[in-house]
Image 1 (spheres, rainbow, N blue to C red):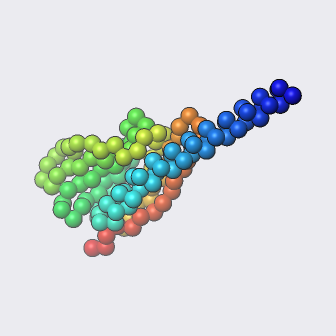
Image 2: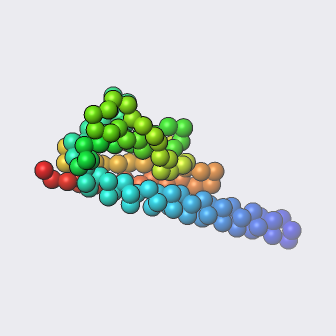
Image 3: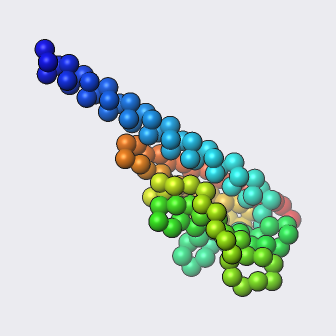
Length: 131
């Protein structure tokens, strides 16, 4: 009887950790996705850097860069007329993969998030501003 109870306890605990882990990752994805979507919708001149990071222009002339570094999704901005990106905003943690594809009109983003108990993949296409 005791082994059955212990097995049930272990199964319930494992399932609960997986559920909480998945909810955490869904929250991470939802938090940055709305801001990203709004910014891409106002953007134009979508392109990828040599490293595969997303670059595009805002109506103000500033260039925005999205990249992955040390399991984080990072946003940086280069002001119009400047050469260097300045400042970083960490948008999401637990990012093990991010891929961007552009067609000149919008961005296809594929992001994988993973923590100790769960993983989540999000894929979406966002169309930019039309000239």
